Image 1 (spheres, helix red, strand yellow):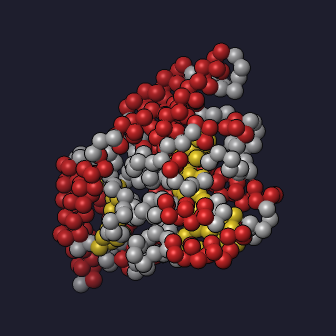
Image 2: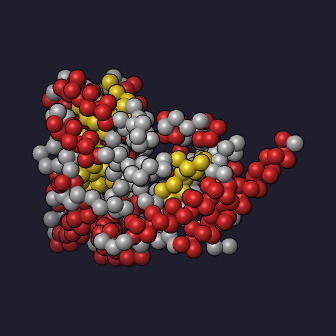
Image 3: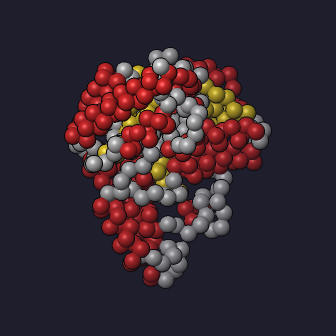
Length: 394
């Protein structure tokens, strides 16, 4: 049976060109890029060329790209690095502002910061765009407490529903009130056009493996003149913002993935992907009686989240896996948990529906044939589970 991969928000298949770049770097550029000899200089050149490629993808200066191990580390450097920076330079700024819709890399970090004495303000959700923050509430908060706020951290595109926040407005509000702004751009970069220079964003975290690059490498955009306290010490790498020998091979792959993403974004891939997503979710929802979460227009082109009442996501996923369809119940980091998604609950979705909700996420490699066959298998799996449930109850 042909396997159909619809879990691209968890990770994407590394492009062939990326795999070759990583292998070539491991064969030829394995020296330490901090070494002063020629071999070290060659490795350093690989890193800097990749930095240029990543900077072009996101629309910023080369020096504003800090390589990390991924989106989670990037978010931690942005959030902890900002909180600690202000603790040393402006103790009045002790408040972190975020939402319950964030990826666990931000949401759980905020909870840990809260336990350690940082005041965290959890913004309510928007009534007009479910799964995104209420920016009117943010504006009110900024007017009242701007001098106390260390950082506002809001994700750009939600990893579970694809809901897109108005980062342009959020950044403008923060800049107007002199407050630092971070966005988790992990699901955005490489899938949508990005130009940090045109936005009032101070920090943005993202990862290579979400855009057909290798795992274990990401980046944090740090706007020029923004200071963060390093979270990893041990060397002057990354302009003394992230110590440790660079992962040259993975960074090389990131650079190639960035170039490929830029080329793809120049075409009509977004429109074609959205059309495939829409056809898939309409077919499944109509035939299997599913509820589509987050249908508003401002949604990432590749993501749909469908709830099946009175069924368990774990049972659905296991049966789909047996049938060669790979999806998830939300964030891959939370797989294995029997609890419903905190993001869906925060959106006000009933627990009985959240328990049976499945995220399907396409990549730029997904075809119309993949979507049509996946829809057929999903519908058959839901029908079988409902029949089994009815028989058990009867």
